[in-house]
Image 1 (cartoon, rainbow, N blue to C red):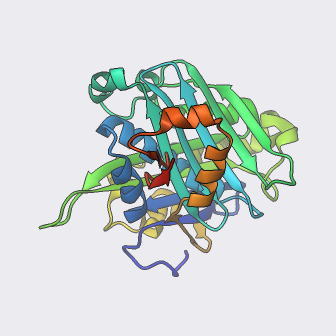
Image 2: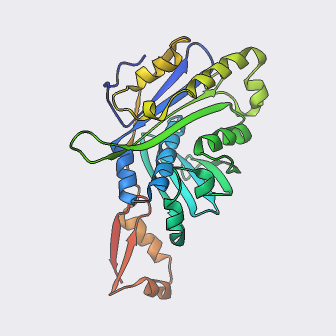
Length: 306
């Protein structure tokens, strides 16, 4: 097990391998990073929880990037929530946002939690790997199927990537004595990845031959015993959680990867966007001689003289 993480650390992704098998995984712990993301937006709790789950998910998936690029997760639907977006840039920078129908605000508040099928209803899930301006993007799109983001993610990998996958996600507010509650998010996922990273082209039937099926089913079943409390408890280290789940088979943890909150917006970028509008369109945006623009990811305001 990796001993490079302090016992109660936050904001990192820990890759691991179950024994000497082809089951590889990642677990993520987000504290101040996800609290800053969700607090800046101030969404209703059910939407905040869903966005926190997306943040944990994209962190684990993005940690597999082998180049300077970005993984973008999107879920779009026709429910009260129109879209959730989270992206992870190689090196560990995370940001996330959502858009919803203002007239459906009360409907969102009535959700019992991060209910994907209730909040987004029918739609699709998109995973985009952006390798930079001079490289072709890879994009996978599947229908948004399942009551939760966990189930929808498993279905995505089954349909788009044909990689056996199991995922557990958790988001909640915790508080220490005398302190205000803060958002936390956690997640753990395993995939059956023979060889170095597996091979999308071989398909699920080839990825999991008969003698591997028991190994995979056991690893997925053990992962699904992880509780939300275990994923969020700051007093339970990621290493201890992995040991609880996989000590019978053995588990090897690799070097942790840091996660930080960051946004790519700046005044110059916003101005270049405004320059693309016609003079008449900019006049419609003007109030009291100024154009005010707010970044949808970090909520930073930008004010321009008309």
